[in-house]
Length: 378
Image 1 (cartoon, rainbow, N blue to C red):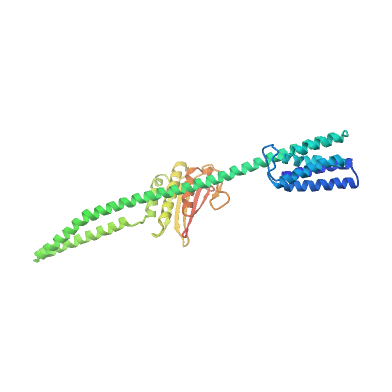
Image 2: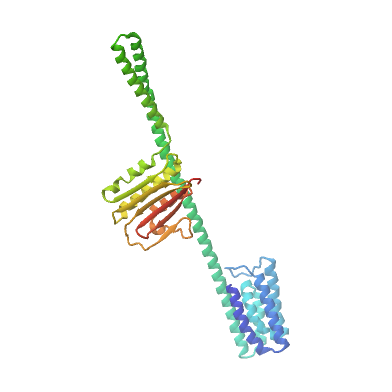
């Protein structure tokens, strides 16, 4: 767009020179030649360069070289074409055609007519300066776009790596918990379970020997107690091997520090069939929010709502404090997803939400509100 504006400006000035040097058919010839050559070079010369070496590297640039050189040579034989040289100088500077530049200067000098030739020289210098400026702006814009694209790519990659690290950490914690549960289950099974089994067998032998009353009834009662104990141990071992995590209990434990300072209102309604990654994400987000409330909140009202709907899970944590932030709403599902104003804590919250394909909405209107929506089929 800068090249087009530059050429329109130079063309308007060149028309003034053409009208001074030629009239009638000669004027029209100069106008048509300037339009044709300018349009061709606009199409042929598309490369923005930072060097100043005369190295055409494509067929289009070679064609442009020929057009420029032929135009300035023609000015020796058809003097009115000298008025087209300032417009041609713009393309000559872009293509680094020093041959055409030299011939063009010679053509201007050979047709010297003061003050018109001085004006042509000034306009030629202006064309060269405009080209250099436009090329520099194009190169800078290209570099800025590249830097911006690289920054976006790095940010996306860092977010992905952060999500992977959080998932890996959650998996490591889960594996450690599972390993510990399995160890406890084995110890109960191998030690307490075997001991109770031996006691039950011994009690059965005693019942077979002592059939007289009231000893038999008392022994039978002891055996029932041992059987109940064995059933309870089996149930406990089964629970230790279970993969379930009680989200409600975990959130209640995490929010325990808030109850001393804040008026905490909780509404938790979530089923036991919630997938493990979703449970970890909800617990992790709640933990981060609780930490932020303890550090930054200046009010005493906090609401925590966790509800399971037919198609999604929704977590809302609302701290009604006024921390002097301007009203702002940021969402991972919208165009504005810059969380830099809120710190790394909420970047982690966003990462956990995205790890389960959830969306995060943060609002600072009427306090500080975190809204997380996680699809069930995510």
